[in-house]
Image 1 (cartoon, rainbow, N blue to C red):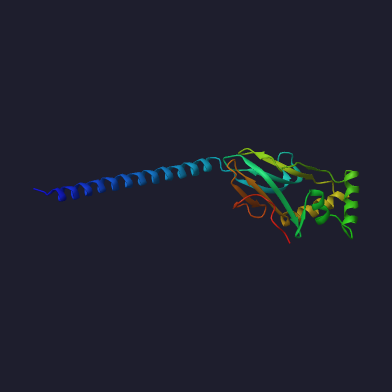
Image 2 (image 1 turned 180 degrees about the vertical axis):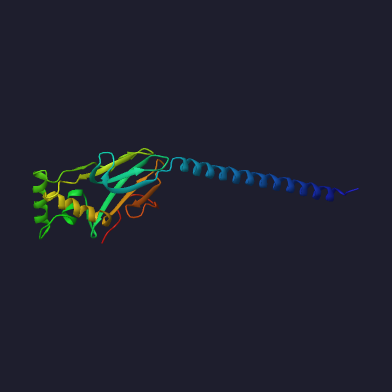
Length: 208
């Protein structure tokens, strides 16, 4: 027969074992709940994951016309919010396609002369191009925007050489787009490399 002290020790041991079991079960339940929550969040994020790609071409199959185009498309399964589209030519950032064409494709001794030459061709409609803004727009899954189009002018016209120069130069542009999902996860991809790189946000990077 156990003494009162022995019974008390046994009771305390049983209580400690029970308490330890309760704590272990509680921790296991908490870990399971947290793990399931993380899995659910990742699953939900994957179900609305956008994948934006930049592309360029020089022929319009639908119209059977030689036409230089730049497009942005969402190949993912969720909407993509376009935060920034940035283009650099010879390490100089340009804000619009006329500036790109002045840099790459117009003759002249300096920017002012090239700009005046290109403006003259635009005014006489020897050069006709269409642009569409993409900054701040949201692309649905499968949606594509052709944000620049330049049909090839007839041979012998001054704009024909501009078109040829742009066609030779279009893959040399450092063109990058930064976009975000509905959960504010952001990525950057480029015309040269379509693989998305996750970034903290889409604020413009510092440049020297």
